[in-house]
Image (cartoon, rainbow, N blue to C red; front, side):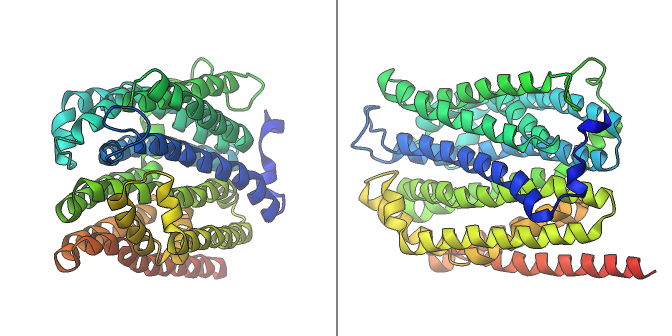
Length: 458
């Protein structure tokens, strides 16, 4: 078994390792975001008759209303997927191969259980949930049609994202990337087929999403059933272990709470948009959020590339390699977010017109872009530092950091700023919270470095 251990994580040069692990993850995360963008582009051009053109913006507004509910599903998926991949990386660094195998088996079972429970609970109360999220009589039918299909395929989505994280942790970032690219390509082909040719409208977009994930999931199972791999699916690893579940949840709690808070945040944003700008403002936010998220996903891809390198070397007590990886990842993240800043500040109109030609939506989205990305250059470092604490198993610090931005800064901003600044106040809450959370992240990192240095001297 030993020849299959990715020992290069502890010996190979950090720039080469980060390139090897991060580039496939970035491509995969960018591709994942692109398929959401492709969905939004097609949905944004759905007219009242269900055909391309003459869009009133209600379809894309209905899609934006589903973001909070999808964030809750993503929160559960991230808790299992990110938690399991981090535990696997650390166990591999410690050469505890047996536990790593059982973590894989527990990941499969947890995804099945949580995915099914979430699907049933949400389908039972879908209309009240959508009303709570700001649906109107005009947008509720679109949101309901989309989410019904997405929820029916929720187990597929959970398993797909969870196993992709495991593939990266097991030393196969390229295969994880190929799975995601396959999903994007299939989704882009099926979207126009189901939406317009078969006349399924927004239901067609959701169906294309689930089917594309199912195809990639089948390939993931094929890869993970290979007995020649160090981590592979086989009998004896599926029995749920309370110890392993606690480890997965402890590490995965940070992304879970972050996504759960994101649900509350988007809920408040949608409420504010509806109050101060109506359904067209919700549609504008949906567009801005999709594009901004593309750059954030690139940074998340960098974080995913960093995670196994940091996790392995932290477990192997090779601290100089840990700090070098962190510094290089932050530098790369800054390149990404500065690019997003330039596009959002100087080319917002071109970005908005990809999704809609509705003049009211374009006007609101253009201003929203400029406000949203106004402090983007500091967001990259803040995101990398948060993921760094998660990668070294300091779950409490990672949870604190993610909750600080969402609960202590962003949510109060969404409550306090709009009454004074109207629709601009809803947008302004985002960069204000980014600035404050950046200083918290830097303070926490300084504290950790100081603590590690003291331990080295004693």
